[in-house]
Each structure stands twice: as C-alpha cells, then as structure tokens.
Image (cartoon, rainbow, N blue to C red; front, side, top):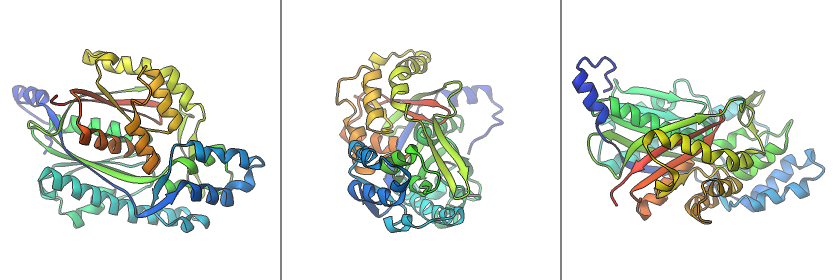
Length: 365
C-alpha cells in the first residue's frame, strides 16, 4: 500500500530510486463494429440537414485514415435522440464491462490476482460515474477492501500517457505497491444531433470506444521500465479541445487548428520535456504517439523530423479502431512491444488543457 507518512528518510529515498516497470498490457473494445462507409451514411442521415455543403464535408470520412471503429451500442441506437440519463446508463454498463475485461487480461498476463492490487488508477473522461468504475468493479473482480482508488477525469486524449505517468509515480513512492492502471473511453456517447457544427462531423468520422489496462510495479522487472514522465500545458488554449455540458450530455470541443498547432509547437514542447531527463529528440529510438487523427500523425512526424512512415503503427491503430481518446496510445504501445521495444522509447499524447504529455520507456536491447 502507499504510505504517505514514510518515517524513514533512507527507506523513502530508496523507494524513489527503484525502477518502475510495466508488467503487462491489455486492451479491450466493444463488440459493435462500425465501418467508415456506414458511419458516413448514418452521419449524413443525422447531421446532413444542418450543412448545405455536407457533400463536400463527406470527404472527411474518406480522409480520416479509418476503416473500422468499435461502438458501445449498435449503430441504430445512435439514430434516436438520447438523454443524458440514457447515455449515462450505457456508460455505466459498457465502461464497467470494458474496465473488467481489460483489467482481468492485464492481471492474468502479470500473473497476479485482483486481491494483490494495492492501488487502482482509473482514467476516463467520456462519462460520469460516482461511485467511480473501480469501486463498481470491486464486487465482480475481488479487489481488497483497503485498495487505494484514484479516479481521474478530464485528461481526454492525453489520459493514457498522463495516467500511466501518474500510476508510475504512485508505484515508485508506494514501497513495492502493485498499481493497476485502467483507462476506458466511450467517445460515441457524445454524439449530438442539435446545434451541430463542423467539429461534430469530424468527431463522427474519427472517434471510437475502447479500454486498456496495465500492471505497474517498482522494484522488479517487467517488459519495459518507466524512466520518467513530463507534461507541458500551453497558456490560453482552453478552447482547442474538451467538452461542454449540454442538455443531452457532453458536447465535443475540437479545434480544426490542432494539426497546425502540433506541427508548430510539438517539437519545442518535446525538447522541454526531455531536457530534465538529459535527453534529446535524436536520442529516442521510437516515439509511441497517440494518433489523434491522420493529419495529427502527419504533423507529429513533421514536427519531430521523423522519416515518413515512422508512425505506421499509430496509423494502423487508427485504421482499425479510430481515435478512442485516452486508451489509444496504449493500443499503439501494445503493437510496438509485440514487435520488440527498442532501448529508448517515448510515449506522447496531446489533450485538453491544451497539454502535451510524455512517458519515457527504457527496455533491454
């Protein structure tokens, strides 16, 4: 368990220097699959009347780099108006099921039981659950009654990376604590059919639903070590990405300038975040990035001066799942680690704030 009142300075200092490792990584998606052609047709049916030029906007679906996405409900469910009560009921049901599926897979891979978990960090920004998801999962999973619960809301697309960094810090100060990190997002529940704008067209072309989970522990070896983490938040950028509350629920805020912003700002931000770790961009063998969209992936490659195609695993996750918000970066990490992680990798994501987040990974060559 985490002990915030550590009384031995030597013991506290020793715990802070222990390596923190990821011991397992698992992903989960809902069963309902939406192909992009059908998605464009349904969007035109629901949203097309709000735009005189929807035929031109329809090209967004073809240019998104996405073939399939997974949704919390069958596509027909989204064609009817849904209240915030209905959306919340679906969130509580489906998000909990995905939380448990991803968690059970991660625990099984790590070879530990649920009652061996000391801390649970849950990141989710697409629904409201109080009690939070890990509390709702306790009876079904068998977590101990004294497990520490850390639910985190509002990180959006950066949540997979920021949450992983937070989980690593808790493992490091926890004197050998086992931390389960879980992120679940049901982006499809934010579909709105009233007062729609172009951001809604982009979101219906881009977002899907999914979950991921990791087991993190200090003091022994996993498949990679978390060597550091960092964040940078830009001033006066609250309008770039996020949610606004509406009568039907959460409405998307998504600025079309994100790819241009990333192209201009991301390299400098990365240099700032790596410098305290005595690292430079050229030291990194592989960037593992959240694929916010096809244009965002292109912009990150350009900003970091990476060879074209360096982020093809990111594009493949986007093609198969769309942007699932926070879990997406972990889907990419899962693909990269199965190929073999190089000695030094940096996970990176952009999210509401507007914030860039990184986690530095060191693995055996």
